Amino acid sequence: MKKLFYVLVLGALLGSACSEGETVKGDQFFEQGKYAEAIEAYNEHLKLKPKHVKSIYNRGRAFEELGQYEKALADFNTVIELDPSNANAYMSIGQDFYRKGEYASAVLSYEQALQHSPDNAQALFLKGRALHQQGDFENALSAYNASISTDKSFGQPYMFRGALYLSLNRKKQACSDLNKALSLGVKEAQDPINKYCK
Image (cartoon, rainbow, N blue to C red; front, side, top):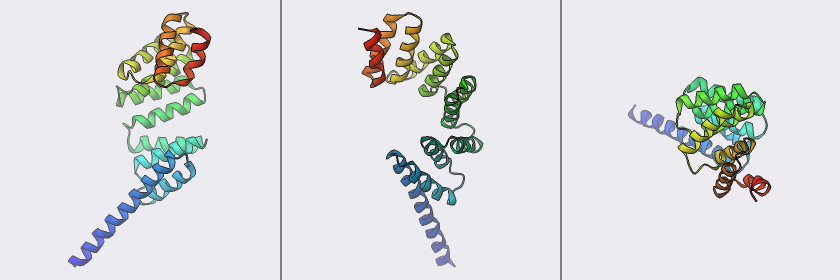
């Protein structure tokens, strides 16, 4: 009886290790840009662990990279059902709204992410970007400022705040932000620098 118990425990451990290997393999495929292969690996892992939140979320991201937005959204919503405090899933849902031009809904999704992760520089930036698209410059500026205050090494909010300053005819502040974004690796800042800051 004792021997049978150890055989069963060993089998469970090996099954778990093989299963974890699939999710690691999925992550590796994702990093290599092999999104279809990543999805297959996540599917294999989810056969054994159907509620593994990280695999469901990462599979959604892989679907998103392949342009399979409905499948991606289904996975992100499943993540929220399983883990209602998952800020990444709310941000990804927000990105889906943003992609469709539904900026008010995107803002609400980013705010939900921020309820669970208030110091999330990425969520603050994304919220600012959606507000910016709505023409709500004052609140967009506040969101960009909050994102920068949270993570001064994150270049995107400098870039977008710079663009906002340009639209408000605040050229000196705009150029300062655009140059900061460029120094932080945001190469897209070079064109507006060439156009407005020379």
